[in-house]
Image 1 (cartoon, rainbow, N blue to C red):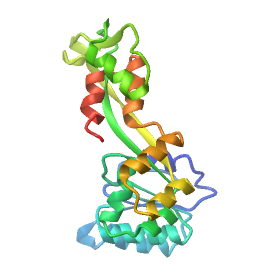
Image 2: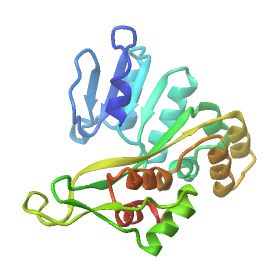
Image 3: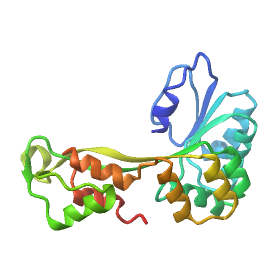
Image 4: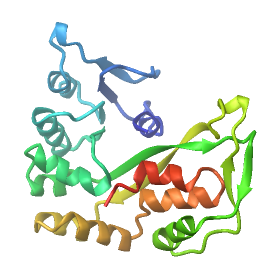
Length: 235
């Protein structure tokens, strides 16, 4: 997702630089640096080096600690567009993860533009998929998450040689996009709970990963059990 994001930017119009561990994809016209502990190249040190080359866009592979989080915030404060990843259960959880790393609410609200959260689910095998009537539990999942009745039939994989008899072949992502509106920025500065911020984001149009998952079930791409395994543990 990070690579897809920076790939949308024109390197002829933007000086794009990255610090990664490891470099998974190579891009033409993008300056990529790999973390190398033996050579003394860390995320923080690499970012400081990058800043001396006047980048327009920066990608940090992952924010893992307070030093990297602080350096990333400082880069964003000085007008750089910065992309990174961080471990959290959901989009709203990123806000509180950054606070756990010692970043003040006012700094987060001043610099953060948006958050994409994602989980992966397996796809129903196209070679052995077969329709089945939704169970009561599956019907309830539709009503609770997307306020829609379940379709008359849902796809499941019967299992075949091509999917090693798992019923699944390939994967797709479940996504949610939180845009930092002025209302959400104010709620963050006011120490509002995660549940309240999540509610406001949904009110403003955010589709949750659960909802995205159920819509993909409705489209026949995956199953309720697979979505439940991936995201139903999220509050």
